[in-house]
Length: 215
Ligand code: TMP
Image (tube, rainbow, N blue to C red):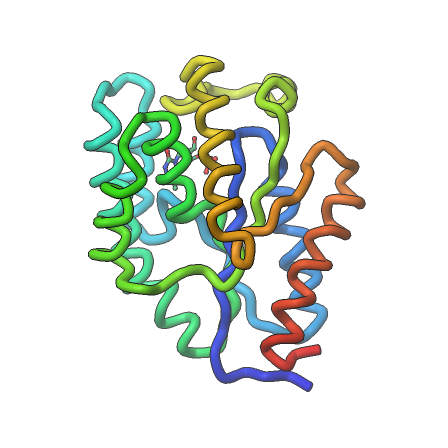
């Protein structure tokens, strides 16, 4: 039976090259098979303002520190929530978001050295108590993710050009977040085949669908 009162927010997280784009598309198809209305979006981005800030944040010609990054990311997030995410959830849509606040804990916290407590202050200011219904953390050794990106080609952005230590710190911070909130954040081993990873994702998402009385 279809429950169409409130939609849900599912976020996908992980380092570069873990396969988020592929799995968002597969997950969209899976959820659409239940007749759900899906919006796929991303952070930073998701609104015209947010996409402009994304260009700024990823511009490898610019230099600014983790505090400035964090403030810009939350400015984009505030708009994303207000104009897209919250209204869509209220109207029963399901949102698949490529990264959300856990990425700030991982990149600006783990990678950039900002204490989690400072990030939580801004999280509370921008989101109040709002959290994703489910977060899928796709985890892969950093070197494997980088090898996948190398095969992809194209320009390297400000974050992709950071060194291996930064990327390992990001990975560890993601894993720490997952340990702190294992109910919401589900760990998915991304080194498996696409089919196996999708299967694991579906297992987690099916639990959410059941909670929402959709299956
Ligand atoms: P991607 O969405 O194409 O993976 O790129 C976005 C980049 O932005 C990625 O390298 C991670 C970074 N980022 C942060 O540093 N903090 C954040 O809060 C978010 C959402 C992204």
